[in-house]
Length: 207
Image (cartoon, rainbow, N blue to C red; front, side, top):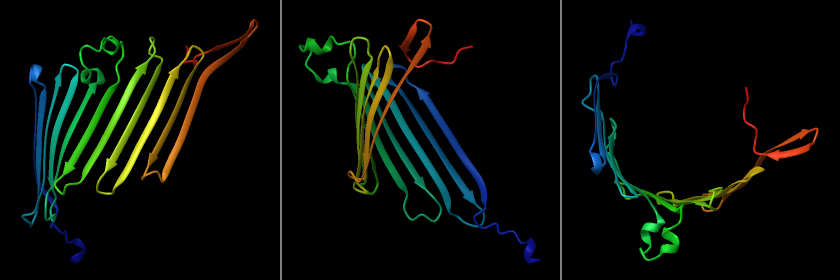
């Protein structure tokens, strides 16, 4: 008899889920989603609620979000609020600075910050830019920090697309410098033929 017994305690009973998203034209967009999971023989539930809003103000991209989650048996809910934005650095310069505002490519700054209900924060800052008139040179710098574990991480990279080869160099670190990595790559092609040798970009697939 016991071998045929099936324990319904904490077995999923029913789930309610709602998802709403709406475009607001020039004012951006928002989304709202929520779910509630119930179980047999208990009043405990799993609850999840998410809200987000994104908008574009000229060249400034802005996003905010809020997440709420509480699992059965969990005494307190987890909540996380996040703020993200990206903008070209020329927006921070006075309009009279024509030497920079006339540039074809701008440096872009990105920021991602979140804080939970216990006051722990996670921050990530980034800077990217494309250089040279043909846009063949670019770089990226990222820096992050987590207050809960008091850990930092970051990366820097530079890419160059030349007429004869592509080159990339990058550096990564984490855990306050205890882990570091340097990587680099060089790619191109060398074709030998009856008239000599031709250097060029990496060869793609051909039919």
